[in-house]
Amino acid sequence: RGAGGSWRMKAVEYLKAYLWTSRGEYLIAEVPALFTLFFLGASSFGRFLAPEVIEGMAVFVLRFFFGFMINAYTDQEIDGRYTIFKNRIPGAVRTIGQRNFRILMWAQVLAAFALTAHISWLMRSWVPLLLAAVGTFFGAGYSLPPLQFKVRGWLHPVSLSVSIFFIPPAFMVFTIAGSLSPQMLLFLGGVSVLHYGIEIANQAIDYNEDLAAGVRSPPVRWGLKNSLLLGLACMLAGGLLELAGLYLLVLGRAGTNGTLMGLVPWQFFLLA
Image (tube, rainbow, N blue to C red; front, top):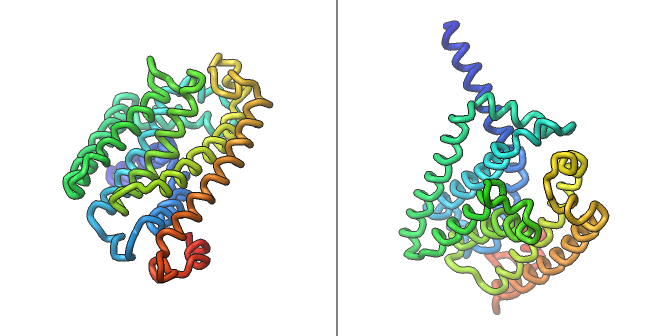
């Protein structure tokens, strides 16, 4: 009984470390976004139970966790110097073990690609595999040397926006709707630009530590004031693009009968 209790405590400890390094708390905030994408792309509520949609959500979660985990693994030395919550991340990696952590990361990638291959087969389309490949390349390259897009000037916004803010929702929309319309691409582009602006503000919190460590993040490279101004501009521009795309999507999907999934446009806007 004592051994069983010790094993359970160890499992709980590993789970907490895993959720900490993968930033599991952020996933909660993604749930409303996933439902919004479903309402924008689905033709009926029954679409939610389609195998490719369920598997697509699993791929979304696996790739979401992988992106944070690879950043946690490569930034252990820097994160340990922070005075904010990030200084707990290296300890969580050590709890799992360096080798185990690497195995866990790449096992998630393989699982995500296996599911994506099945989705592509179900949908008779290479688009899901292509989106997954591009997203994984920029997601891994954001942190992994020798690429490390996050410290390479203009490649920082490209890699971050593509891997986190554009590809994942585009992947989900395609599995739900079976296509990516120009209006949807406009909406997703707005989402990507807006959230990149928020991320610049988030990275400004790490300015002192990044400067001391010689990490050429946008706030360090461009200056704190300029970075925050750019972030604000991205949020404003992205918000306008997002609203324009959403407006066109709702009007286009409502069609001649004036409803979308049985809802009039203003009801759909409220629900989304």
